[in-house]
Length: 107
Image 1: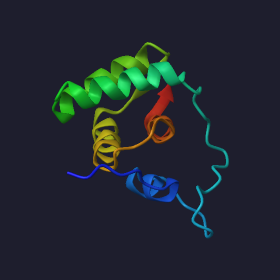
Image 2: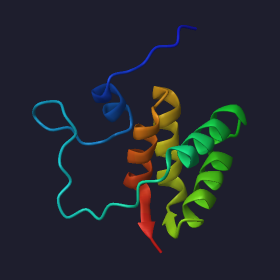
Image 3: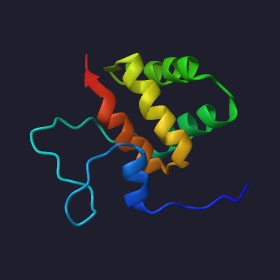
């Protein structure tokens, strides 16, 4: 299988993120943003999700624990959908950050 890098626009579309008229990420007004996790933390999470061969329920649980460790919660269903998009699109670390921002809420 050929591994390729997707454009930021393709990654955003695959992750279900809103795009503006110009194809760039749409500005999020009045949406509270969660903290930007360190690259090392996101890399470790992404690597664990990719190599552990977890099913969607286990991957959502792992990610929920990651978020809980940072004081955030997330719906299990929303996490499964976001992680499926991330996995299918071979998303970058920035895309994973955006996906987590899309589902996390402050507890």
